[in-house]
Length: 363
Ligand code: PMP
Image (cartoon, rainbow, N blue to C red; front, side, top):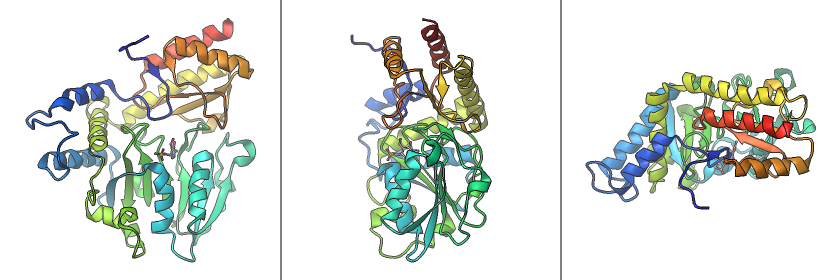
């Protein structure tokens, strides 16, 4: 059946975008007002695009209160390329970097870093299948580490740090891909933050990096230009042709967050409410639905849970999809179900899922 109606999209990413952003992009796509060309057609060296990228950065800076001594970069290659760029740029020869292993994405970051230098697992929650986060006491930091890397929200397992791990004077590096701009963050605590845009910030194709100036001074000479943060910073993310459309769309999302939602404290409150509805449905199901993550580590973005059997999970998915609740299948590495409820996911969709869960359980 062909449908032009929008369904409830629980995908983990690329993921739902704000409707007003989609409508704005649709309106601009044929011809940007006053420009006579689509954003897909304008030169990245034009005044038009310069305004687009400048405003995207300004709005992001305002949202996150990014201090002046941080650069904002719009890069390509996904968050996955950052797994390599970080050690290439910031793990010096003979040095060692600390990583917290809290799920598949942390694992991915460690795997790539090991190809480039010495890596220590400062803590790991693999023993309990990544259903929790390490406590402060479990984290064994190397005070001489080049940096400490962690994943603020593990998209697959559904565990989310409530606050940054203490890193002392070691620069803190965070893969914020799946909870970027979903809550206020004290940027000053970080050396570098990176996030693939395709969950909360925009479409696939652009990765945002926020990096403190003094880390740029540590970058060794001779890196390939496209992999050198300093080159990207010096050229305002336009050493080569940037992903113009993706940056434009992120810019619209940042304006939506600022002007329609009212900022990150507001979106955080909305995200807390949405997640609470779902976790209440899980907790109130007399054990029928089992959350994967321990309570205090639960993600506001990716709610992971299981049913009593794989048969029932299959049936749940089939019926949910038929009822317009799409994308609830858990990642193949953990199975079960996962409801991704990023910033732009409507509360009405969460309410619909909660009703569906109740009905399914009773039936
Ligand atoms: N880190 C996290 C936390 C993610 O969720 C993802 C993608 N789901 C990645 C990294 C990889 O991102 P990309 O596909 O943009 O390389």
